[in-house]
Image 1 (cartoon, rainbow, N blue to C red):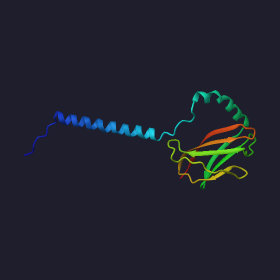
Image 2 (image 1 turned 30 degrees about the horizontal axis):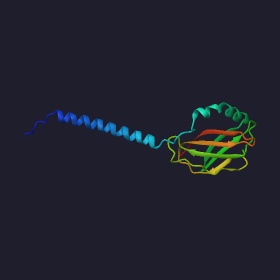
Image 3 (image 1 turned 120 degrees about the vertical axis):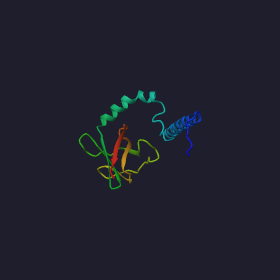
Image 4 (image 1 turned 135 degrees about the vertical axis):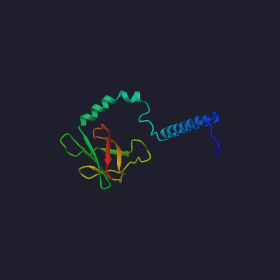
Length: 153
């Protein structure tokens, strides 16, 4: 003889509380991870930065520089060329490489100019990377650009 099971109000309440408990727990975990991995602000005051944006962009475009990035056999290559296609060696150059979604993989490789391009040894994991380039021309013009880099397996 088997005992008949009945769905009572307490069972429905337990199912209801359990289901919403799981949903709320997942939402809290996702919200915490979103805030904990946020890389921060790009600028302190976007209004102030916007006041000089057009002038900085025009000065940068007047340089006529083009930048291409690649990754080959454990080396990151930044090739800066002028309007005629000749290699450019700016007064200063720095670059940060990182993922779009997380700052834990961010790094600042030591680039050296080999006569054609800037090269740094860095064994990047496969996937999409960003390269934030900052350079200064000899006339004092700042050149800043974010480049996308895809590293194959």
